[in-house]
Image 1 (cartoon, protein in one colour):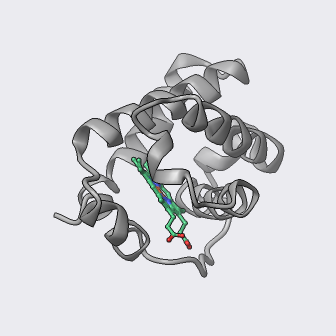
Image 2: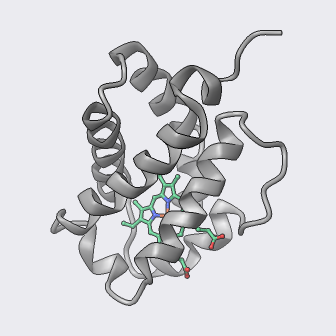
Length: 122
Ligand code: HEM
């Protein structure tokens, strides 16, 4: 069987670290920061870790909210493509910090990108 994207990027340890770095990057980004001012970052990191594990093929069970539902409030507060693009930059930066190969970073970005329409409620 072919390895999953989860396996290829380094499994549990790498996805956990990436989720952590991601929120550090988000909270340093002036465009994204306002959306997270009332959010518990540790809880959010855990949820992101579960979602990424699922979409990278590390686990077939995801019990969190759908992306449409999770972002409904943010969309109502003005979430748009520019925020999504900034978030993708944060994702890429997190993976670069972990010294992942560019080809794998591109693969990860492609998998997350598929969720853009749901996240932006289109
Ligand atoms: C890379 C694209 C994104 C992914 C993969 C993603 C993933 C997630 C996940 C997994 C959750 C938790 C779902 C749950 O509660 O079960 C969540 C919640 C949330 N996301 Fe995103 N997200 C993305 C983009 C964004 C952007 C661009 C923003 C705003 C700038 C944003 C703002 C939020 C907020 C505020 C919540 C908390 C919702 C709540 O607890 O009420 N997300 N996201």
